Image (cartoon, rainbow, N blue to C red; front, side, top):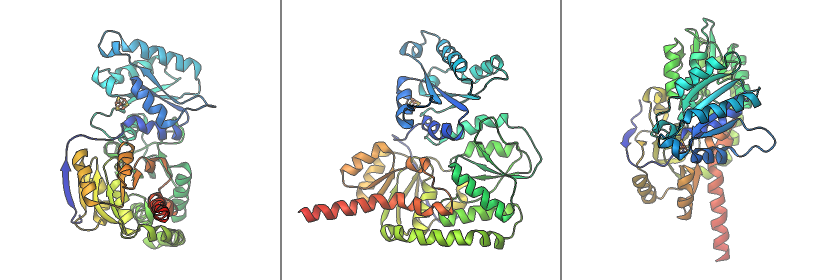
Length: 418
Ligand code: SF4
């Protein structure tokens, strides 16, 4: 492992909760419904994050736990039953219903696993119920997807067929491009988890080779391993370098020669490097500070340093799974400062003291930092944007060069006015 400087920090945190992941999960599986069992705060969060669907019926909702439920004076199960019955009778297109736990449901110890079990018996053959937690207690927002995928695993049948399984939500067009690349190098049986329809879960077993598309799926990866799958060790497919090594790792697992991979991806890589140049001109030598939120920070730092020549001041990450991140850590420059966990006040002090050109952070921290004249990029944008793959490298770089460019323009305008 490269000689990075590991640190841990605990204290007040400033991150979104796992409910946020419903935004990209419900787009991925249009036949699923996500029912948050939570408070009005949870309902506000999910509605403002996902936007209100005006022309279509929403595929997420909240069974509201009122204050009297929280005090244990009323049966929250009744409200849940009422909402579920209403949903199932009105929405026959729902095939999988996720009961998503929240801070309030965890505080009152509402046992959603038992609720899901009972509902599965009642609605057998009609709708499947699974439960997971999206609570913000001690978790960050991308863990919502990890929880949802882990909850689906027991529903996946076994097979001995050899296949490549891409695990983690990515944009459909990115998925299509990945499948085409794998087909071209000779890996033809490629499936994705989560699938595009919740009822089309892939079968898994000892000949399933898993390639993670996202670094925040520790629990899912562990359970896949327990089911006999092989987890391919690779960096994540961000940028030309990460994506190339990611495809090479899969090829190696299928005993496909490296040369074949380079033949297929060389034209893509050349085009992507050229497209990157104009962003690297802006990003080169600029100081980058990543605050912990999405768990994508280490991969982003590797891309922005190795391919866009940014200087890394500090790389925060909410959690660090050294096994899954080993290949990424090996690609970071020596002495990169990694901080796992968060004490938001201390981190903000270090941000101010180091005077970075760009800070990657949560939305809640971005406005105050911008007000202090520090350029920011919301980390949540990375999970809503199609940033994976060789051909997306320039688009990924642009997410970071744009705020710097905007700042340059604003500064030169205000100088001109002065
Ligand atoms: S789950 Fe917790 S952190 Fe998330 S919106 Fe609800 S109360 Fe807030």
